[in-house]
Image (tube, rainbow, N blue to C red; front, side, top):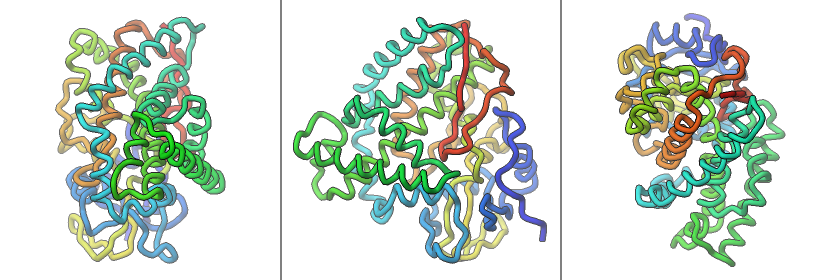
Length: 390
């Protein structure tokens, strides 16, 4: 048997798939690998296989035997965050879907547009070069989550620190402390909303029949993390992809109707943190994937990056094409386990990137692409900084 490939794979170019991952994908769809912690796992890179397994009830997000099976660094955080919510996934999903309805997203969009304009006004007045991550990618999702969820603005700096700490994959003690602080804050927030409800998502969750406090707190923590950290990362990498593809950016200026499809293409291309091999799943029973036998209890890593760069689905996959048909993208998962918050993330990206392109047509990187760095310490990845000028 071949020696398992060792994770993480070296990222030789910020905007391209790691060469070793690309090589493995060219050799097949399922590969034996060794995790950062030294455990063996199965890495799945084929689009069809990843799509199927994302919605396969023979797999579980939770480790069925934590004492004996391989563990993924990212899964420890996710298991803690999801807690008991995963045990009643269908009910929890039905509770979360209404706040993301098309009607509510349309109503929220005008507020996101207003916040974006305010941030871009401030950006225009700053001394160049400006870190676009700090000026736009970071503050916009924070402000949106505060207003939409019902988090006091004066608490925004605290919860942003806690979510970053909780998602840290290099310092378990820091991650545990961040989780404790985040959940403690959510408990207090829920208690306050029960006493003084408002017109916000947390208040509506508190008023939902059949939800106990523990479930409301868990859902609040999930929304705070999922709606903030991941969106920050994607706005930053999305802006970078447009800055490094000026002809595609010009297409958006010439035809704003391309923006929704362009955002889906940018999400397909965005490079998350390459600290692990993909979405962790555990086999609940023996199964076969494309001729490879997986034993019950073994760890699988479903690699969304590879799936979104599968040449059998996306022609010339490393080329940004804002006119590309991206219906096959697995950025937000697939099936019953797809990301319920996708409409909010898409809407924020559409507003932020469309207005950025329109307001700053001459914006360019203030450094070379090779000088930029990804955040390797956090589950969500993203850029450390994004210096720009115009």
